[in-house]
Each structure stands twice: as structure tokens, then as C-alpha cells.
Image (tube, rainbow, N blue to C red; front, side, top):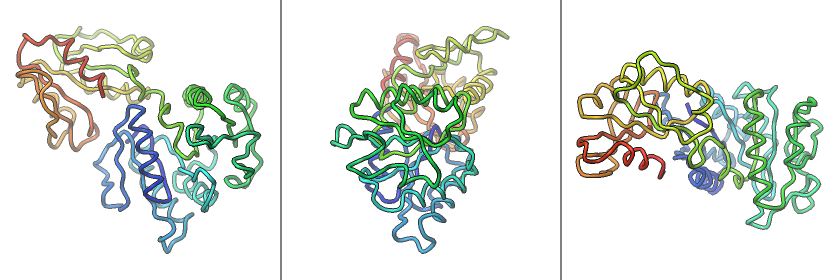
Length: 321
């Protein structure tokens, strides 16, 4: 479903995390009613205001319910939004998330610092409060960002990352991105580091897909595509297969450029879209929309109605998100 699903206990936390994800290159949706997160919705980031303080089921069961719903929508990355002062019941909510997402054996990484707000984590403590005690019912290692990968390799499954500067959050995002290639990771944070994570959402990460006269039967150099900033050109018959393989590899497609209206119609049909939300014009006769419905909801599509506007100009517009 999404690059990441975030569970927050209230709307302030949900909006804060969503704003950071937006700054990092994603377009998150914020919901608080289960019917507003239908199975056919496929956002790259979903942030839930669980309203746990008003829920008669309690924080753990409420978090489990939302996590299960996201799991059934094929969400692959989870984050528990915690209060920057560790107020509330973050341990109960995290336990519920792990239960509902069926991720009890996942590696859990807490990134509690928010340096820009004066919240630093030193020795695993925020304002004297021990982060591990507030979050986990098992021992945890306190690490610097540069130590994170080594401790996971040593078998540690509960970790608290110290951070005093924005650079520490960036370094943590890079380390977690590398770890996710081999491990299932769940994170917990007040949201500060989400402007750097997921790394795949950052500018010039991912690729642009041009549907036109691409090479027949040629294999893609996926290592090059994964490095980011690439334009992949394929024939219309291969567009869906390329997108599915990219999703399997955890790579983000920034959007699709289709040459001509007939070809664009075939593309949106192949992607199972129900309708298009109009975003505007990139250039005269070159309009931009966003897919609504289907597995690729949220994907940008630009139609090239005239060769006077080169494909390179349309592709560049996809990187401005």
C-alpha cells in the first residue's frame, strides 16, 4: 500500500508526522475513521489519528486494530508516533501496533530526538526520562546513529538512537534505509526524523517512467535505477510490469509521462485507475493529473499533447514534488 503507515494518538501528532513526511517528499493522507481508509486507497503514506484517549477499547487494542487494517492493505513499513516528552501510553500503543501488524519479531528502533524543538536524546534519555522504559517491555541498547547497523548485526532487536543534531537524524535515516534491505524494521519517534525517512522519498530518489517507444524486451539496470534520478522509457505493454518490479524492490516512481492521449488512456486503464484528479498544466497541451483508485492511486500522470514541449521538460516537473 504505502511507503509508511504512522499511528499517532491524537491529531496534533498525526499532523506533525504528516508534515514531516511531506517535507521528505511524500504526499500523506491523515485519517481518523476506518471507513476513510478503504482498501482500494493506496497512498504512499498514511497517518492515523487513533484518538486513543477517547477510545473505549484502550490504547493497545486501538493501535492493534489500526495496524491490522494497514497490514491488510499491504502496508510494509510502520511507525509509532510518540510524544516528544514521552507522555501518554507509548508502550501500550507500540505493543498494539506490533500485535496488529503481526510484527512481534521485528526490530524496533526508537528515534526520540527533535533537535530543532530542543529535544535531544543523550544516553537514551529525554529530559531525564528513560526512553526504553517508556517504550519497551524488554532490554534495549542505546546507540549512536553510526553504531546502529553493527548492533542489529549483533542480534539486538530493541534500540534507542541518541541524537543531538539534525545530522544525527539524517544519519539514522540512512542507516535504517540500509537495514530495511535485510530486516523488518518498526520505528517509534515524535516525527522529527521523518523529513529524512523514508530515504526513497527524498528529492531525486526514485525514477520517472516515460511510456513511449522504449526498447523491446530489454532488461533494466535496476542498480542504476535504485541510485535515483533516472528516467526509464518503456513501451506501454511493459509499464505495469516495470512499476510492479519497482514496488517489489521498494523504489518510488515519481510519475508517468505518456506521449499522446490514446497512449495515456491505455496506461491509466492498465494501472486500474478509477478516475484522474486534475493537477493543472505543465505546459500548453501538456496536462498533469493524479490517479485515483486502484493499486497506483496517487501516481502522477502527464500527457504530452505536443512535441513542442520536450519529454525532458515534463519529466523535470515530476521531480518538483
